[in-house]
Length: 265
Image (tube, rainbow, N blue to C red; front, side, top):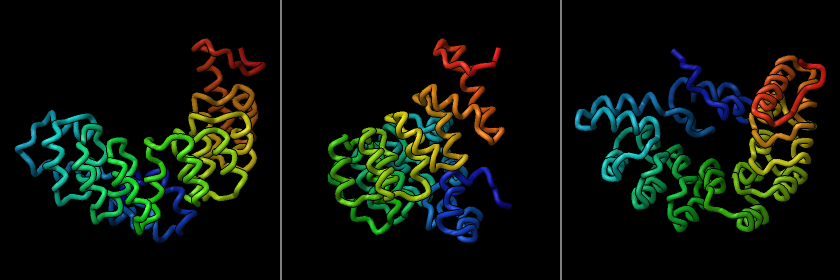
């Protein structure tokens, strides 16, 4: 049976990018889709951990919650035949650098993709991922939080994917607008711009003009969304978007941020 809850936002976007048939096949058969990369490897990790009575229940719980556990145990789990489990090791904040270097060379695309943005991955290993045969891994390397604004400008000038750069939380607003105007982004660009912590009213206007309903909802989840844009979304022709915008405005009012929708009590 297909577990639709295991299909992430990226999978849903991938219906447009790669075709419904390929994406559906990947969702049914594997926690990692060869075109779209990793989704939610929790179930495979839980199955593997059930075969490890030597791992305490507290360590299993913390591992699944992506909370720090002992580096020695993380290094051991990184040797697992379960690529889902190796992906979880790559997401753990306590994973040691030498383990991350090994995972960055993992034969599985999904594991490498999860490893690339880890802030503890040594820069030499991160740079090697720019030559990875998978565009998904290369894009994940661009998203690493170790890159600062000037370095991201350099990556942009070198031709790296615009939506991958836009997904980096350190990408400055000027760079985001340059990417938006360049047309060098996929259908994910609007989503990446909408969720950026560096968002500005100019970026919001671009998303509103060219984004989808999903991008508008992503804007509403961005705590830095400006009040004028929020009020515009409260008048959106799509009822569910307008309703969510009004709810967001009321939440801000309750928090003392004074972003009130006119006409509401």
